[in-house]
Image 1 (cartoon, rainbow, N blue to C red):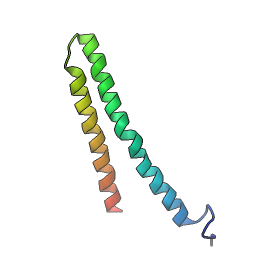
Image 2 (image 1 turned 135 degrees about the vertical axis):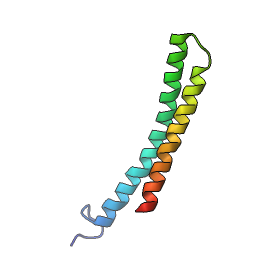
Image 3 (image 1 turned 180 degrees about the vertical axis):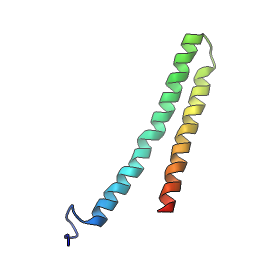
Image 4 (image 1 turned 120 degrees about the vertical axis):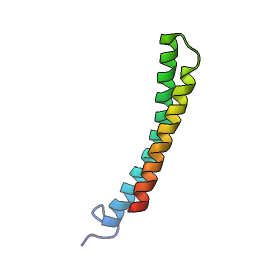
Length: 78
C-alpha cells in the first residue's frame, strides 16, 4: 500500500491526470482559434479576398467549443 503523499498513490495520480486533462483545454481552445484565423488569413492573401479570415476565425471558435463540449461530456460520464 502506498503512502498518502507518495507518487504511487492512486488519488495523487488521479489528481494530476485531471489537472493535465483540464489544462489541455487552456491550450487547445486558443490554438484552434489561432489556426482558424491563420488559415483564413492565408486564404485571403492567396485568393485576394477580404472575408475569409473571418470565416476561419469563426470556424476556429467553433472547433474550440466542440472540443470543450467533448471534454465536458466525457468528464460527466466518469
